[in-house]
Image (cartoon, rainbow, N blue to C red; front, side, top):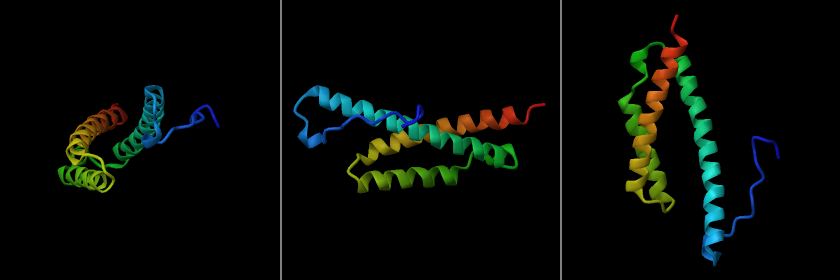
Amino acid sequence: MTEETPAKPEIVPAADCTQMSEVRAAIDSLDTLIVSLLGERMRYIEAAARIKPDRGAVRDEVRKAAVIAHAVKVADDRGFPPKLAYQLYDMLVEGSIAHEFAVYDATREG
């Protein structure tokens, strides 16, 4: 494993956990993966800021609705509470848009 990709500790399946330490270790490991994926997602947001031709293209309500709808459907299909997925993705997309505006503006200052 590289420094960027830490070795994943042995995760006990949720149904087999008998101790809180197992549950917490698994959650910590999953949180590390989730945040790593969110970081990778943010690199694409930054690429979008670089590619979009004008500042008005940064906020796209149609795309926002599609991203959230997709997340809610995937959540429902995979046993994750859809309402929570909606709330998380609404916040994630709004935060991503704010970051994209910041990157867009920073790369075009001068």
